[in-house]
Image (cartoon, rainbow, N blue to C red; front, side, top):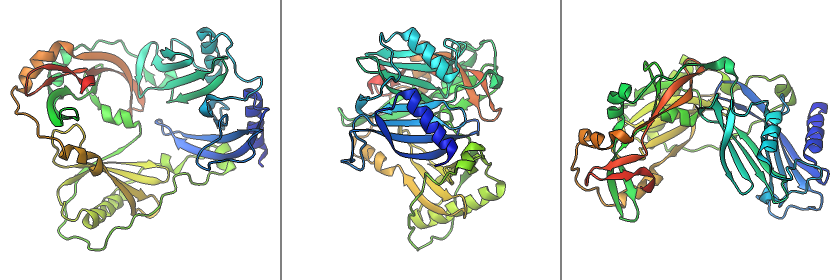
Length: 423
């Protein structure tokens, strides 16, 4: 075993009190974060000493410690004791479950400052969730820190999700935006959407807000869906047309999403291939490969699909396609086409058509009785515009925005104001 890996393993054992455990397996992983930085982690599974054999190959035994540590910062990304059972000796313990003590420990582990970069979000019966912030302002995409303790105050799970960036990439600003200033945009974001109701066995037409981030200077917007996926994209926005079908059936190929990561790559922080830009030539070849795939698998759909974006993911290029003609359903037709980054040929795909099949079994919505303008008048006062620092992939920094949203909608057939949480 490599000396550096061995040192990390010993560090983990001592720090977490895994003296009653033995290391079952370990592997190196790498991911690319939203800043296009390559992050290497060592993933370990520690079995309790009394577990000789694994009864179920797919399930880890109770008390197994599943741990992921950043190879270069030596900070834990996650620590999970399976089924909340720990056999750690002299491990991480908060005897009184004191929040101040837990916060202090998190600050030491992460290097973050409470109140400035993270704050308590939820707390219930030994479970605490902290949420990322910047000087008290919410952040998107948001980071979370989860901590779970057992009745004795022993740590049974800890995980850090998200980036928690340094102040150097935050464009600090004074929040000046208001709902009055974005009223026209608010009207545009109010869309007629059909929500499925399984109780009534029908589709319910509702005017609801499509969330969006508006920059503080109101010169730009950031779509909510780009932030949810939290990765860098190349915009394509190209409708696919063809004249002839390809009669040969498409054959899916298996994917290898783990790949092999060497110790040298990890400790020299070699950039992942996923961090490289998709060149114009690669984009052209991807578009050609996608067209050939559509000619095989969706041969009668010429003009019906638009390539929206391309992005790299674990050695592959993912293409996101949307139906060129959209309806009012809450979930829209979507294709994800997976392309081998080496030969730029399509190897697999995912279609959300099976999920959308549930809509076909529901009754059609009632007749629309009110206009978009009338619906806006009804819920105008219920709109929200909250400050957020949002990562702008173009500027490669966090900018201050207002998140335009509304938790209510208007039933388009009855004119009644409804809570979207109840739909």
